[in-house]
Length: 219
Image (cartoon, rainbow, N blue to C red):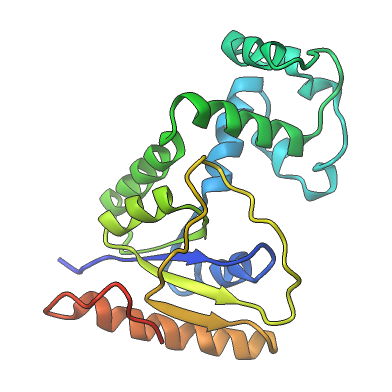
């Protein structure tokens, strides 16, 4: 049986991780997985809404009556909010829902979304996928789970990117995430695509290597 290749992309927001994922899935035979998508699906279920409402980039900061905290189907979430001094009726934006819901989930079940992603990867492997890309690795808890599954970590760099805070979906400390390889996204899309293919070829060698290669390997 072919050894699966699980690639976990990490890097600053807007560094190009999602662009790289779109180059790999499905064109290069990868299935794409995202912690952020897991949060959106979970929140959409709690509000009993179509997940596309939470994914629409044009609505991310638009308050909507349907997203008021009081519309959530989980009474524990509403109690958690009111205990923190928040009001339930005001309209809320998708960005607010995603942030606050993930904080609530991880406050009581720190590894909730790690479990979700681990199960999703397991289902994909069970369905015959041998290449999977997780394009928003941000925390050490996520890293530990993915490494346990044999994932190879790729750090995406964008030299012209201003320093911005990293949004996290669990409360683990923001410790440095070690990478097996690095991709520089500082040129054209064609150049990036070429760098991505070279990186995947390199990672395939790591997967097929007969002996463990140190986790500090970088390109």
